[in-house]
Length: 120
Length: 168
Image 1 (cartoon, rainbow over the protein chains, first blue to last red):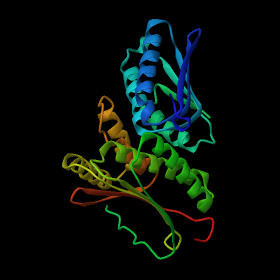
Image 2 (tube, rainbow over the protein chains, first blue to last red):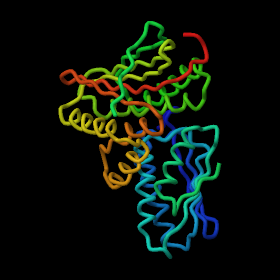
Image 3 (cartoon, each protein chain N blue to C red):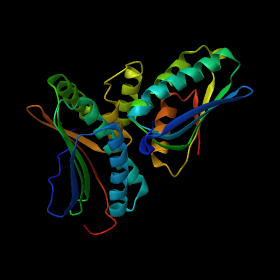
Image 4 (cartoon, rainbow over the protein chains, first blue to last red):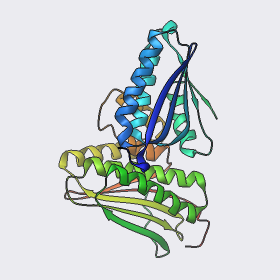
C-alpha cells in the first residue's frame, strides 16, 4: 500500500508516432525502481514501433530525487547512442511553479542537447 | 579555490530534529523544510533549492547510516545572511572515504556545472553510489557542501548566502 506522502505513478500512452509518459506524485527513493522500469518500457516501445517523439509530462510531479534523475540520464545516454535513423526526440513538459524542474531540466538539456527539448 | 566556512552568529533561527530516517520521513521532512524556509525567506526558488538539498542529504542518511540516529539542523543565520542544512550520522569507513573523495573533488572543481555534467556522463551506467545527490546540491542548489568527520560520525553541511525576508 502506498503512503500518501510518497505516492508516485506513471502511465504510458501512444498517439501515432508520439509516446506520452505521464509522471505524477513524488519520485523519491521508493520510486527509483519503478522509474527505471518505466523508462525501459518507453525505450522498448519506441524501438519496437515507429516513434519520433516521446513527451514526458512532469507537470504533476512534485519532486524527483537524484537517484530517479539518474535513471533519466541513463535513458538519455542510451537514446544518444542510437543510430540517427533510430533515434527519437524527447520533449519534457514542465510546470514553472515547480522550481526544481527548471534547474533539473536545464541540466538534462545540456547533457543531451541533440535529443532533449523543454516546454514550460 | 577553497571557500572559508562562515562561522555561525548568535542571530540564528534554527531547528533540530533527531530521528531514524525512513523514505516516508524524508519526503515529510522535505515539505517541512520547504515551509520553514518559505516563511523565513519568502523566496520560492530558494525554498525549492533548500528543500531539494534537505531531501538529498536525508536520503544519503537513509542509505549510509550504519547505526544510531540521524540529526538534521535547518538554519537561517540572519546576521551572516546564510542558510545552512546540516546532517550528521554514523557511517562505515568505506562510505566515509567515498564522501571525502567526492567532496574534495567537488570543491576543487572550478566549474560546478561542468563537474556535475562530467559526473552524470561518467556514472550514467552505475547502479549505486555515484554521489550525484551531493553534486546536485552544489550545482542545482547553488550551495557549498562541507564535510567533517569524527571517527565514524559524519557531518555534511550544505550552505549558501541568502537574504531573509523577515528579521530573525
